[in-house]
Length: 96
Image (cartoon, rainbow, N blue to C red; front, side):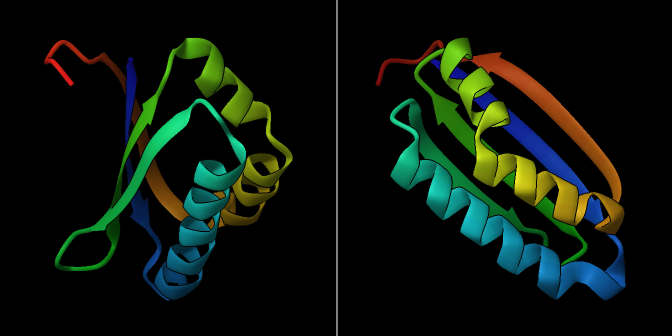
């Protein structure tokens, strides 16, 4: 099981637009990608930091996500709105 943790810092003037686009991306990923098992979108209290917790069956499933048309469209749309982005990969070691 592959865990992806992403932390975005969003430019303040784009918070609402980013939030809406991210929620759509998460929903589409869960609906259309068999290998996407969890896609949680979390927001820090101050609102400029968005944290994602994603679970994929394996690295191949995540690679398919990165090539999915909905993700590519999302990424192109939101890239100018992002101040900083950090992506970390983990292997799930606890029992499910």
